[in-house]
Image 1 (cartoon, helix red, strand yellow):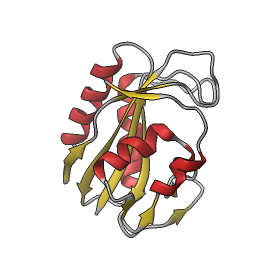
Image 2: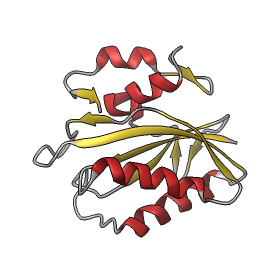
Image 3: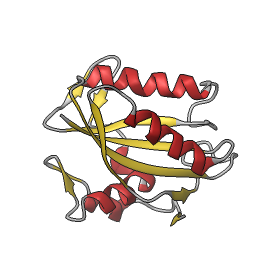
Image 4: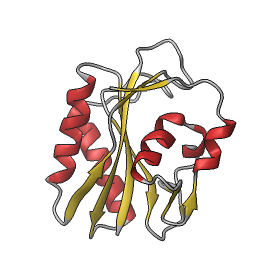
Length: 156
């Protein structure tokens, strides 16, 4: 199954954090990183009193089920030393499942498509780079960009 993951960071060497997260994903058994968007510098959303973020999206293909991929993401975050202290606060690394091919999930631990991805320019712009027609796995997202105010973003 194919997945789109969003990766973000605003602590330490942000570019290196994203590169290392992608390397960690490439080491996961039965999983292949198919492609990655550019890395973008973005202003924080939600809690604004923090450093700007670097964000990217990757498409992976994996034999793992969605909850297993979630476990992989959480494991990579833990390996980087992520501590969840403040909602939308600073983080050394954040990996989110944005979309899963042909899957809609709404469970206690996982919601796919990601419930707020259409509100976040830092996800939509990298996603549009990977899917220039503005649709991925049957989910249209390009039109959502029209409704987003602010959220500056620039390619690194």
